[in-house]
Length: 451
Image 1: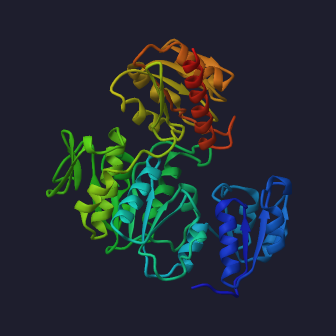
Image 2: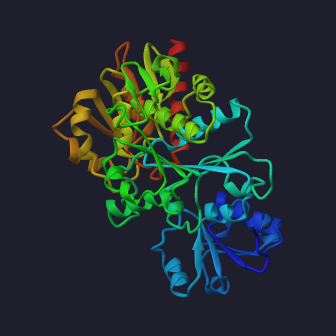
Image 3: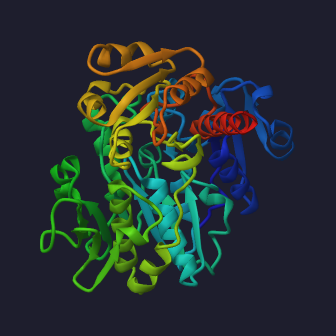
């Protein structure tokens, strides 16, 4: 229920912040908008100024006049302005939390988090729900913000949310009917004080669940199992290693088994690789936990394609296949990618550092990489980790890096962009990095055809 007497401040004017501001306005409330970036760096500045009271270029003490702040996931809780707000007794929440508070209670919520696989899993769940005829929205850390939908009105059957650790850090009352935790591996260690702090952030997805809610868990993730006592909801476990009766979904040779009655051949799925088999299990256990027809969901899942920038096939040039895995911004994602082809490949890596130890990839790269091509701010750190242990070469220019991998390839080779790092050293985001990679490959295709 929305209270028009509460005055809100919105900090950070990206997708989620702007959506929250306009939702407040739509419901008859007022919002003060604040962004540390200068006005010229905010594309919608003129429109925002026409509709709200705004400040750009800094977060001022004017914010302290507002009892509730909705903050962008990009603003760390350690930021001076956030610490100042907390000291002043300000309630600091995420757009996900705000959306939950105003949401019509007729919709069931499925929330998915994890270090890897979130976007594929939520998109697969959404794909199945839509194919089965349900009114479902996909929001959160993927696509449109939650508040961009008419969530305060009846008519939505399911809300499927991808939720990041940054969003979970500021949830208070948010609760999912089905909460999914895919894995916990080192990530965002530049933002958290240590791995345990990051892991506990992920566990917050279960914070407000009760015994009549459902939790879907990966039984192969040690950090999850170590914290499993924190979960009060009914548990549904899946595994690539264990089998029934220890888990509810498992591998049976080339088949994925969901309970004792339902199975799907991995050869019937478009999405490939063990990590995607695990994502499929998680999605099907969600469908089962919702009490929906599992057979129909399995059939729908067979037509689900790989998402852009996630082991996305790009093209084959001179019998060399190129794959775009730009979303692989941590080492665990790269591990999944390396074993997905069943043979050694050429790997393009590097980007902006998130505080990970790249040495954890050494053994797998020695086994599955013909050569590693490095480009980005992590060059020195990666070179230190792998110099003398595996074939590698460093480049200043991203295009030259891709060109070199192609020039050294022989027919049948695979060239994979799987950076193990964020993209902010040279690109706006991982999507732009992946799109630039695809453009370079397209130019290779054109040039080769002209010969």
